[in-house]
Length: 171
Image (cartoon, rainbow, N blue to C red):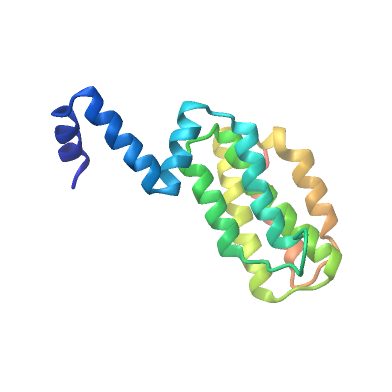
């Protein structure tokens, strides 16, 4: 069903019927529940921290060994983005993902090549968003601290991150 068709069907419903549809949707889908709760009570800081915990747990779980499931981290970012938070919050979460990956490699030593490639690709996405929003200066100290933390890593990882950073950096 297209949005136009959905709009037509919803227009034909009275207020009580629309409320009933919304309540059924709320109960039926976890994503809908989360979206509606955020839409009606948008506490960005709380939601941002919730998604940061998801990412942090992939690299530094409270119990057990790190899993480093990048797909879980990307899904957390994607799910957060669907809530339509302030763009600065989204940029913060995207950068937080890379920071955790860098912290892990600093703690545990060299990782596998795909690990670095994934972080590089996602850092480029984060930098692109940060630059588009005009937040490069706002995030620069944080980014530079992260870059400094991985200077001793292998696979040309720090060089690639610096190249990406300088591509978007505004003086």
